[in-house]
Length: 295
Image (cartoon, rainbow, N blue to C red; front, side):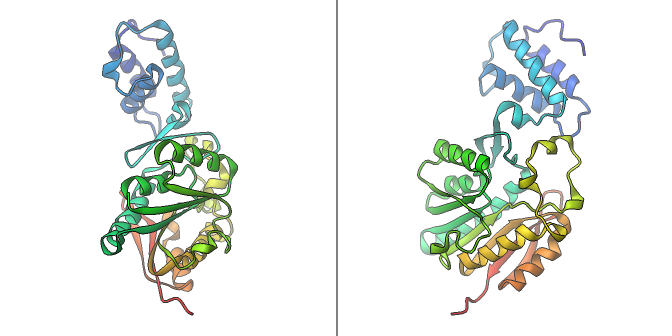
């Protein structure tokens, strides 16, 4: 596409970028153009960009837009992503935050608020934390909370460390380990109020079709086994061990897995088991209360 006649003006650059990205699946041309220009200009607002724009800045902007046009996710280009009002670092080989996970986190946070109202504090565990987004949101929105997070893979663990140190230093206790293993955080068994998890859960026959999804590591996507339930079942089992009686599990899943998740939760000792829908009205989150714990 022909470049703008006057690249020294913010409006000209944005108009060119919107046209370049128009019709691109999973892109929001105006929003993406604006964020890319702010990123190359190292500012948080296009209104702070001084005109005339230097040719070097315009060239960096052209390159960034072309990357986005080739279906590289915006978060991979800018190295940042957004979650419940937070700006997180992004990195290769780490799952990119999705809007539906904000809803999952919100369900857990609202449940935690009720616990705080009753006992003044709350204990929360984020299993399969990835970038640390859920745990950090909990620590940010709930100053009274004690928060733990678990991640196995090296790249996400390192990114979670970085995000925690940047946004909520000393507020989240991060553990590298298998979130499904019975010994993980075993010292907290029966003491946790809320467990939130966005684990790998995608069934093998539901591989994402968007080109951007190719940038997410397979280990962060696929749940394994029949219907992608291997890892989710392990998370449900570990949550049952961690939660006190009456504690709450919130777990993100595929729309096709709602019934399987409820069944797995009931088999593991959970009661008041139900499914919450996302903004598209698709069943995307298991919500289950820990039943009586046998002595």
